[in-house]
Image (cartoon, rainbow, N blue to C red):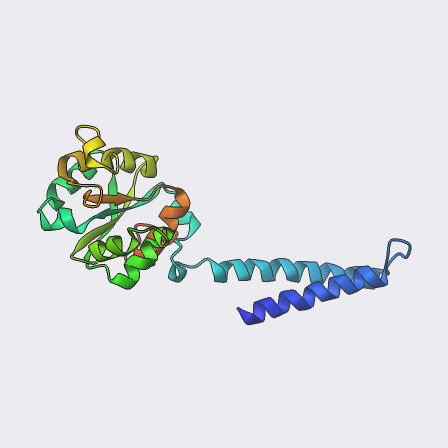
Length: 211
């Protein structure tokens, strides 16, 4: 990372120098233009490498090619797992046209839960949310279908089970806002981040065998 930033700085200084030495009133020679062209090309390559370094599965971001296949991230939360609702929820998922591309049963650590819900870290309920999500096993999944993010959120229902539509997962299996059975990504960027956190092997081919 430091080498890439240093490269960008050096190239930027070189281009600045060319502009300073050759103002509009003085035409640069062909040799200078050749050097400038190479510098611009090197800048583009360095920026691309920097982007590849910054956006990686290890940082919690799934690759964009994987997201192009209408993937979303889903969780069956500890309350639904402990109540024995995993089977019926998975049945609903498949009956509604989702493909389960990845699925794992895990206990989310407090550290991972904090990263998962980092967007809520300033909210008063953040501590209770982290404690709940790390209180027992969860089922984490990568789901695929057309308009997966919207379709999964519609199948889950409203955040408050009392306000969720009949037939939705939260209406059937949720008991409170803080115990609402499932989680789903709310946007493509969120899905990319969450999929990267829990399925860092998920790349250009979602169906490839995990390493």
